[in-house]
Amino acid sequence: MSQLMYQASVPVFKQMLGGLSDVLAKAEAHAVGRTLEPASLLQARLFPDMFVLVKQVQVACDFAKGVCARLAGVEVPGFEDSEQSFADLQARIKKTLSFIEDLDVAQFEVAATRDIVTRPGTPKERHFSGQDYLLHYGLPQFFFHVTTAYGILRHNGVELGKKDYMGVY
Image (cartoon, rainbow, N blue to C red; front, side, top):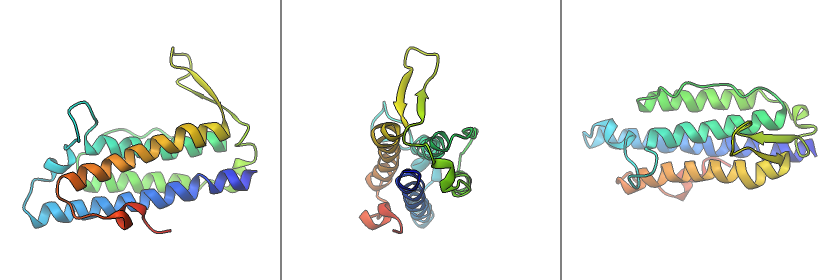
């Protein structure tokens, strides 16, 4: 089961973060090519009550590292949310990828049955088995934020397609 939980998480996060990195590179090139202020894209959002692009990328990275760490039974590394440029976002993705790439399949030995608690000690506390956490919470949350980042950029005229979103697989 460890192999399956590892394969359903780490490679998926790696693929999609790679795609997100490429999408951000195209967005930066778009801004430069049209002499746009990068902040016009970095602070863009789809609707006033939604996160801006920078926060979408931060949260996507947080889910990738958090889900993998919890499934592997290791401490979730804390990243400061201080990114303000495309280069900063690329560095965050790279740092996230470095963390999840260092995880070994053996660390996922009991991942499917591991008790995962989200927001411990709060009224929103929720318990999951590792498998349910990955499939019904972690991956959907991650994909939501990656997709929203893509949507923000596409909405703002960055020429992107499905192949960009999907990354290398």
